Image (cartoon, rainbow, N blue to C red):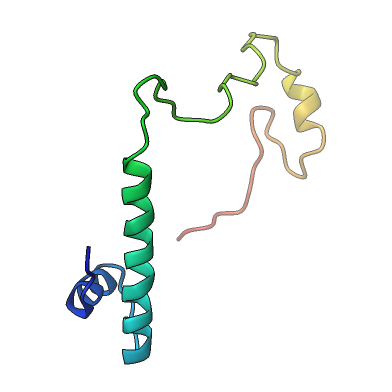
Amino acid sequence: MKITEEMVDYVSALARLKLADEERSAMAAELEHILEYMEMLGGLDTHDIAPMSHIFPVRNVLRADVAAPSMDRAVLLSGAPVPDGEAFLVPKAVD
């Protein structure tokens, strides 16, 4: 497929790129090479190959979620500069 400079202008506008004249012609040539390669890949026989989304099998590596008792509130608030027994007291941030 022949990539014209008008096509390059359209794609660069979509990508919000400003290309100089010499960059436009270079980009047209690069896009043509990309499309030639994609056509070559399109000609491969992939009939017996299962589709995949990842090269390696994806598995969950996180630990199981297990409920556990939390720390004692008094222990947690012991380091607070101004505790009220229930929560941390902080200065007002918005008037």
